[in-house]
Image 1 (cartoon, rainbow, N blue to C red):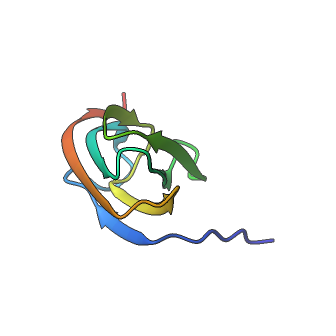
Image 2 (image 1 turned 120 degrees about the vertical axis):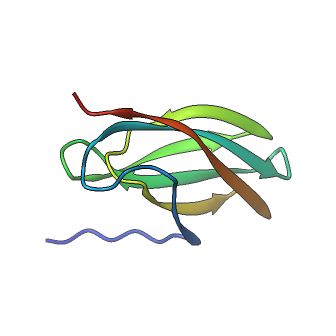
Length: 91
């Protein structure tokens, strides 16, 4: 059975493609600061997983092997910016 999820935006981060990543370092800015989001991506096993982010600004590593992400708005999110700060190659 195929699983589905809903999202508000799709974004390609600046990082290599082809499953060569262990993680992608990002800076996320959210407005209003009380809002949040779920960021979905493909994990090391090829499954879709997510990371929940809340607050005005976060610096995190997304555990995704591909730079394509899907964002689901939560808690009244109006604007989001996601900047790639770097990435960790898969060993």
